[in-house]
Image (tube, rainbow, N blue to C red; front, side):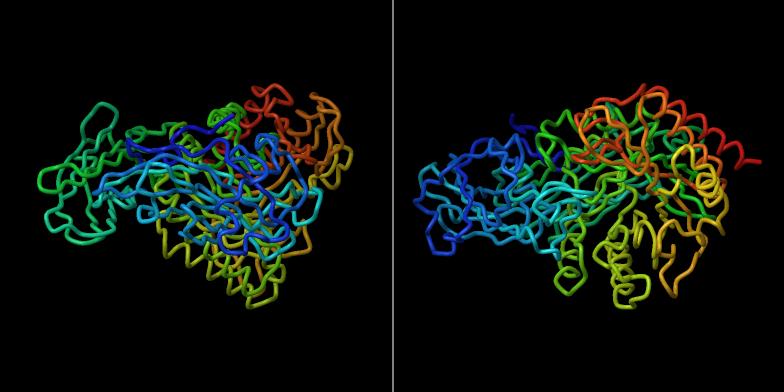
Length: 600
């Protein structure tokens, strides 16, 4: 099984070469590769199916034994013209990657969650046959690495899953001209009815210009040409053009929402002396998110978020979806259950998932894998990851919230430790400084510092027979005061020295009802024995949530079972555990009740 779809759907060129598939592969437990040229003429002793990690079934190896160093190698054929450059792209390699082309070192990359690219033109052989080698280093027991749900012990247990080492997203090549478009940053200016383009070039040609064409479906919207006067060119384009039905004043118009995921297409052409040198296709959505009066607003209207926690694991591929269709299936199943988005938990997801969230209409809260402990290394590593995350995923309209820290992971003493508080404040303001179009949560769950949303976790709904526990859970959600003062954990909602500032309050983890349909041992926060009991438990928990007139959204735990966790609404294989229409009825019925009560 191969992943052959275009890996970067928001920045598309016509010519590209997919390097997924069979590579030579070897473990290097003795670190023999530290000796120069060890790998150059060495036939590696196994093969692997890229982009699946060796721990997964789809890799063809399926070995869960910890190996900190692994090597990859494959040949490919490419021979650019004299006025062309070749760019080698890696979707993600966990955790450190050293890349060699024809035995020449071309890159050392740190960070397991995001993409990186290398111009390898100068390392290519004169004939068409080339070779790429990759050394991946992933210290399994280093708890300062941002690893999230990847466990640092030998076997999965609790809420932690199998580790992933090495290449886990697509590897691919592009041929580009000497003068090309390096990057495009697209910012919707919702209130102005415009879009802003920030286009970056590696160099400036004195006679170059950039042509753009914007369309909405089959309708041409705008086109024009700007002179390329610097390596970064920023300009705005009018979209609404005095047409009221393009706005969301009477209906959704041409704006992006989960219910109406309207998108604009845009094509950029770099032109030099009348000739098109480079062409890139992209898209964007006209949408805005902000907070006001204790509510989240989408496109200047209050919006109640019904999210589901999505771990992004698959039985045969682990962190890597077996096919592109698996992303579509997860989104469509979630929408069928009545959810309008997900919190992508402790993982930076493949850009193909974000593409389908944009296309199908599905809110995404973007999160990054966290380290387990706090020190200088872990702090620096997480900041580096977030710089790359925002650079890669900035243009996706589906992402409306960033979550840099979860449940004090990596900052275990944040409730009272001023240094760790400074760190989450830094992350909040750093991300806001890079991206003014989205909300940021400083520490999802509890011990919040500076934050746009008060994100609370509470699994204390109790079993069905625990009436008093359930009534306390329900009452704890009923008012703002109770939400921010009552604890379901030892930690306060706000860290010492911080307090509620009228932010929207969302219950961002709860539920987790364990329902085993596979016959495998596992756990959830509470349990159900059959479908009828499962639906009854889900209704009972949701009744408590929707009875609150102070919550402005939720994130239910969780979309699917994962390894030993059996608290999903779907099995690990994405089979429904119950009639999904009945779940949607529960979500929809009580959503109407909330809207009705809030208007009185």
